[in-house]
Length: 202
Image (tube, rainbow, N blue to C red; front, side):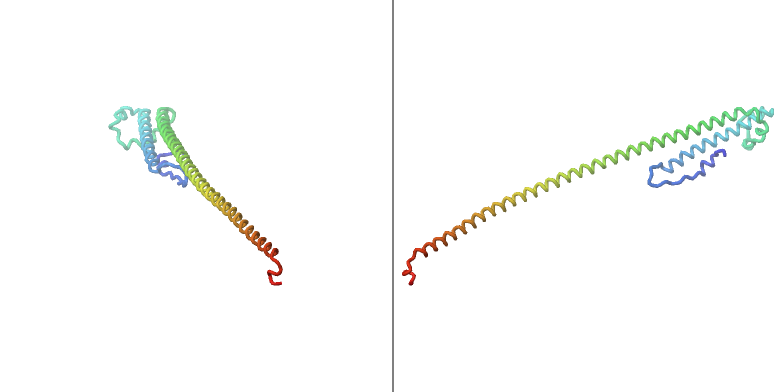
């Protein structure tokens, strides 16, 4: 089936979510330009076919002034259908129109590809910047946490040293106290042993 300008106008595309795409309005405007140029090419093709048919039928003087040709004579493709063999200029115009449409489509494709690549590069750059930001924040938090833990360790080590000193002093004092009590007991026991029996009333 041959593609017509109306096919381009009425073509519906499915919307895709969560993926990169292009502005629908911009695409529609560009397709409208393609349809306008395509219709102009088709009208020119029909006009040339009509002129060729008139020339082949011997009515060349009537078809010579192009400005005086009425619009009603343009959509009359019947003589062109009757004369099928010498229709060489018409394919040339159609090929030119087709080449123009293909060129426009290729340019549109190249623009879309370039835009897609630019968006991809921008997304990659944004993702890399976000990764660097998250990494920097994580490293800063890690340094802060390490410094806090170091301070807590130093505090705990100082407290442990203080407790050890206290234990050592306490043990020393307790040992001195016990030894003093033992000496007192020894002295009392010795004095009791040296007292005569008469002195204690026996």
